[in-house]
Amino acid sequence: MEQPQKNFKIVSDKKTRMILPNAITLIGVCIGLTSIKFAIDGKFAIAVVAILFAGLMDALDGRIARLIKGTSKMGKELDSLGDVISFGVAPALIMYFWNLQYLEKLGWFVCLIYVVCVALRLARFNINSEEESSWKDNFFEGMPSPAGGIIVLLPLVLSFSGLEEFLFKINYDLLVPSSFIIVSILLISTIPTYSFKKIVIPRAMTKFLLFGIVLFFGALLVYTFKILAVSSVVYLCLIPVSYFHYKKIKKEKNITSDEEDDLEDVL
Image (tube, rainbow, N blue to C red; front, side):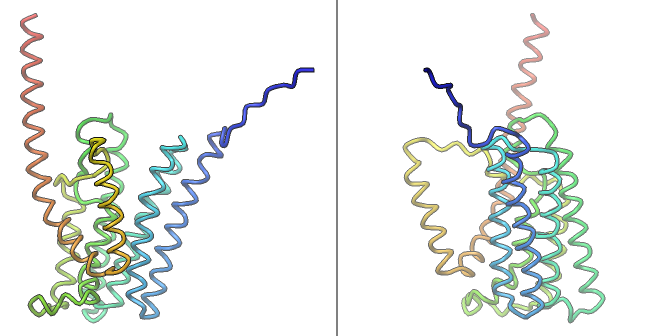
């Protein structure tokens, strides 16, 4: 007697496929909230590491959702809510307990401005992400909230990195509120920044890329705060590069579009 064939599928229902990415997002939220607890206890180094892990969860949830076809509107909104907590509220409170509380009302006001800008940044991102995909997907409009959450922690990272002996004396009472204001402006600005989402790597370069990734994360594990500080500075230096790169591509696309319009008129 012939046995009926059975088609085995790891995940067949979309509602089931939504569970994993949403669970990763919620884990990131928990890690972000826990970083605040570490800051309250005065464990600022661990708080920074917790924000890094929250960033890792944020990088994984969307990619896994697209990989297993588990994307959803709920996941999108949940991801934005998690980003407000992990890269808005948490970094603001960490820096408040570390330095800004000594500025009293001004310090709290700076925190409020930053968190509001993170929320506005994410609201704009949700609206823009509904547009059709194009070459512009290689760029973010303004600084993304995860990057903003790391950059505002840069003064704290510098204090743990041991790089101060190679730099001039840092006035943290001035650097911390200044970094908050600058990052807040970059978050809500329209300055294009690299998204690193659609990078095409030639097959011959794959092994070198993998080696570079392993080398970077290995160094990050050993020299956490030094690598994090240097990476943050490199990212800031890439902002003007991404701006001019965006302008160059936009100009080329506009020229191509005008030529196509002229051709249509002739035809």
